[in-house]
Length: 494
Image 1 (cartoon, rainbow, N blue to C red):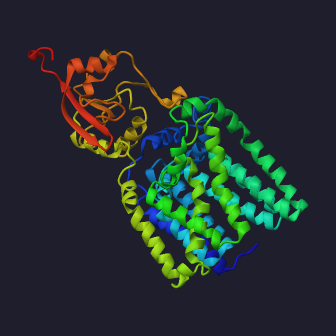
Image 2 (image 1 turned 90 degrees about the horizontal axis):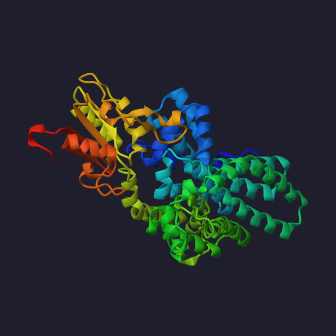
Image 3 (image 1 turned 90 degrees about the vertical axis):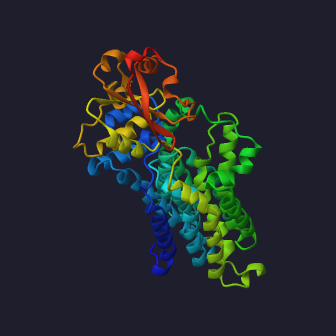
């Protein structure tokens, strides 16, 4: 099927808007906690990646493999790690705009595409090296392909739909809950039309489930290790979900209000279909979480696409007298402007911090203050900081002095087949020639870290605390690098 240039405009505008808004701040924030795991995995060999999958993160392995290929070709810069997410989210915004065009016209499509980069969570995951942008894109694209196939149920449309559905589950299993809404949409189409060609959806869905079944089985076995921290949902979980998913209550509830108003302007069948895409996956995941908690708000960002489409339809309609007194583009500017203003505090925040250790800043502090004989030591709660700090230290020029070695590192996380490195037990022997120590860990009050890093439990810190004292602390966001120097033995024990 070919599209006229005017038909392609909403997709292009949505794609470009997200690309520009999220792209300019792509690397303004250093790699965060979770991206440390991505960096660690993406720089492994395929064999090491599959070994990791047998232990942890099996459901994210396809994403890791994709980044591994890119890193192998282009290197492990922050741009290479994050650019795939940016492109996927931009494409997702374009697809959202295309759904809007098909549901409520070109104007609604354009507005839907412009609204997407006004949603803080979509911008956040557009520059985060994790699979959520891909989940948003493929879940939204699979819904578009389904709506198209239901109207014209040819075999090739169902093949494309099945492939996209498989990719949705491949990049994030929770996003595959969109299939529950698809089943409802198919049932409604069959009830009304009795078109036997709709049955062609079954082999497409079956093939997609076969493709993702290994990930489902592996994910089920690793559910506790991956999601042990997730709480059982309550009524509060449901009530706060619009704001939690959008990263802004004001933005989330405004979009929800506009999408509810779309009932009066969108054809009933289309409204019910889009409503199903919002409600049914949420009900399925929340319901499943009552038995085995797995609901995390960021997993539900794909629900924002149909919400955005309905909101855009409300803004651009001329059917509501209350809003039709102004031209649609004036209304669109007003609503998008309101969303931008409401989201501005969060939009600004996500471009400054991911609420994670700024290991880029810590690396610069070490580089500027390092001396011959310095070593780096990590606390027990810094496993995710090791790959990112090493990444930034390796990216600096060490001409005035040498890069302090990770002195206790015995075996890398890749060699272990896990996400945690193995350290030497012989702490005394390894630190014999260390003149100063850069102790790396969470900042005070982060993961229970004390103001005094040498008061942490464990033999390693106890040994270091007996022989070294703090000279300076460099705190960057939720992480800190503490410079330790040998104690003055003449002063006696502390």
